[in-house]
Length: 260
Image (cartoon, rainbow, N blue to C red; front, side, top):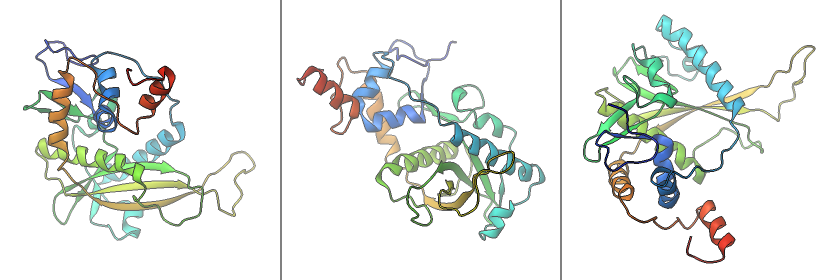
């Protein structure tokens, strides 16, 4: 039977597919979520982050080399994590395909209480040889505008990253894997403060400072959020925008009233 995705159809009894990013949309603003999923409104697009995508591809390539050898990466060894090796599984490549997360053998689970198919695309998974548990890994890229030292997760907007890690670890647990509660963020920080030359004779070389951050996952919010999503999808009216929703505030100012 045809998969249930895109605009929500309450008459379709197939699991409704929701990616991690759409769940994050609900977390930020139920009204915007409703507009997209129930009303089928297409929101303005934003340009892709091509450099971020490139660092993801290169990191994946490097770790795949050691995945094949089943050895720890020299970077991990230098940080005192020689017991971590890239996890090898027949479906690993499928788990990384975020655009097809709802298809067979991809990274998703069907949440029976809400009939939601929840998933996304993993960056990496590392196996802990001491505990036989797996750690969820997320690659991140940025370039700090101030030389503030190693990156951390203290910025309020990085709560989005934390929820992503929470959800992916929760999904893999539900899929039957023995998942460690600690995940890792591997951060590439484009170094704009280096004294080394950027432009060489034939190419330019950008240096990245690398930071590995441990994060203790939190699953407490997930079940309740999925239940709220289930209820919101079945509303006959659009809920209110969140107070800090940029789209909601834009619409409110545009129409100069609260009926939007």
